[in-house]
Length: 149
Image (cartoon, rainbow, N blue to C red; front, top):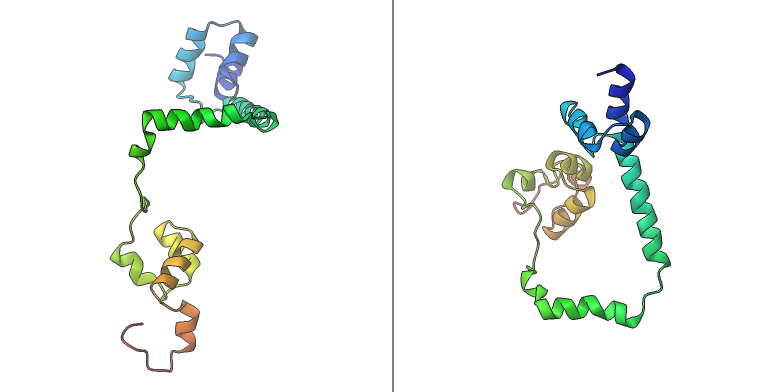
């Protein structure tokens, strides 16, 4: 495969490669497969998808929805009983004992980085459990801490 063509296959959309090099869709598909080019690792395709998403979002925002158009999805959901698929409660990753042991010992941002959570999520859990911040613990280092903290 030529240098310019290979670079184009790696960087541009399949449609652009087909147009400029006068290639068939199957040929471009085979070339992209051989070079391990996907929709996610190709900047031209990403640009095209992003632009289409923006245009679609603008079209949705600009559309004046009638009451009938708003009621149709609700009616369909009720007819298909889609609520049966909803599970109440928290569905994210559970806190492990190791992660919980870090609360209050390290700054919330560091706990978040180590556990893959947000700093706010760490703060919420630490507050819910009544654990003071790491800074509060350092300030009280000279004091005797109760066994609960």
